[in-house]
Structure formats: structure tokens, C-alpha cells
Length: 337
Image (cartoon, rainbow, N blue to C red; front, side, top):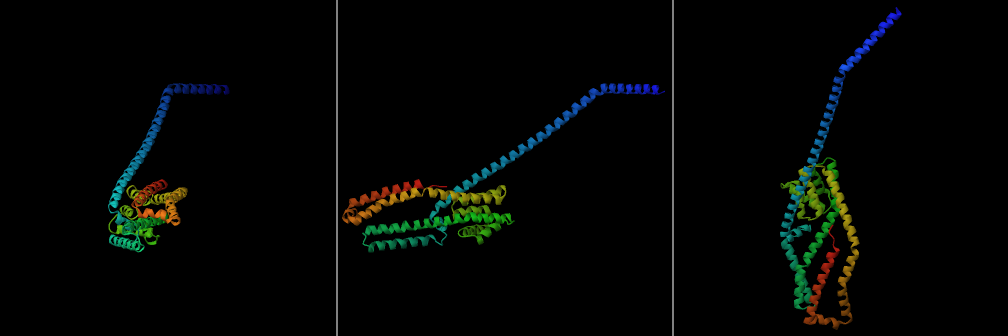
């Protein structure tokens, strides 16, 4: 009985194995086809996902290129507008320079002060015993040259003070914007609590907004009273941010850092060029010092230059050549950063 059951079990197992082998043999091709189909489908899906990623990356690159091109076009337009504004300011240079001094000077008052200075110089020269022609020349030089030199000196001093305080004002604006204040309030904060002459310039910006100008236009208008590259950078940053958007606090922070680096570079260049400047001053002053010493030791030897017409011509040509030399040396030791 046990043996019979074992034979039956073996037969059943053999039949099962045979049936499974026949089923696998019949279904093998179908199973392989399904495997290949699933593998092909997975490859197609991965390729589609890769294509989608490549397309998304291409779209991002195109968007960045479009934005870069838009920024470049904006910079070109701003440069053209700035050149036009510079030409307009050059047409009324004296009036704009008087405004840049920060003093309440008008053209009539400036001309009156120039005439008064020329008259005083003329009278002093006459009282000192100078010839009439020399006194008239001294009066004209004092009336035409000295006031403009004083105006230029005041403008440079005010611009230097502005460049010293401007990065600090930008830092205050950055902190104000990061704390949640809008740009208008940040400008008003500098206009009320800033240091001179930054406070006056920003006050003009706020007043320009009150009469209807936008913030970029008001910042561009600052170039009329403070024509500096640093102010132009600030106006361009504000204009680009208003047109293209972006992180204004980060842009202003970077601008403040750039302005400080420019100031350090100017100080370094000035220190390196001090030796050349000292040499130029010594060479330029040497003829006058020698002439004074010769006049003190031998007055008759130098008096002929002032009394003889040929001496007048020699002094005239000497002054022309000295002016040319000073101009050349000045251009050699002056560097624009």
C-alpha cells in the first residue's frame, strides 16, 4: 500500500513537472516579449523625462539670455540718456557749477563778486606802483580767473565730502530695506538724518518725487548737482531694479562695497603718484625761485626784463612754455579711476 502510494505520488510529480515544462515552453516567447516590451516602455519613459529636463534647462537658459539682453539694452539706453544729460549740462556749465558748490550763489551775484574782486585787484596794483597795463591785466585776471578757480575748488571739496559719506548712506538704505521699509522711506530717512552734503542731494531727490518724477528719474536728476560716476552707478542700479526687478538691498550693498574699493584704489594711486607730483611742483617752482634769488642778489640784472620790451617778450614766451610744461606734467600724474 505504501509502495503504491509512493508510485502514485511520483507519477503525479512527474506529470506536474512535465506540465510546467510544457507550459513554460509554450509561454516562453510571450514572457520574453512582455519583458522586452516593458523594458522598451521604461526606456521611452526615461527618454521622455530626459527630454523634459533638457527642454526645461533650455528654457531656463533662454530666459536668462533674454533677461541678460534686456539688462544690456537697458544699460545702453541709460548710457545714451546720460550722454544727452551731460550735453545739456555742458550748455549751462557756469550755472550748474554754481549749484554744485552747494552755496546760494546766482549768476548775477557771481558776476558782481567777480567784478568787485577785479576792481580790488586793480586798485591794489595801482597803489603798489604797478604800470597801468599791468594793473588792468591783474584786474582782468582776478575778475575772470580767480572766481572760477574758487568755484572749482569748492566743487571738488564738496564732491570729496559726498564720496566720503555716500557709502555710509547706502549702508543705511540697505539696512532700512532689509528691515521692511520701502525705497521711498529709505530715501526720506537719508534726506532727514544723513550727513552733508548727502542729505541735501537726497532731499532734492525727495522733492523731485513730490513734484511728480519717479524714483529712477529723480535719482538720475542727481547727476545735475553731483556729476560723479558713483552717483551714475546708483541711478543705474535704481533704474534697472525698477524695470527688471531683483534684490535691491543686495545690489545697493554691492554698490557700497564697490564705492569703498574705488576710494581705496584712488588713495593708493594718489600715494604712488605723490613722488611725481612733488617733482613736478619742484620743477615748476624752480624758475620762479631762481628769478627771485637773482633779483635779491642782483636787482639790475633782472630789472631789464621788466623795463625793456625785449624782456617783456622773453617773459611772455617763458610763461607760455612754462604753462605747456605744467599742463603736460599735470596730465602725466593725474589718473582717472
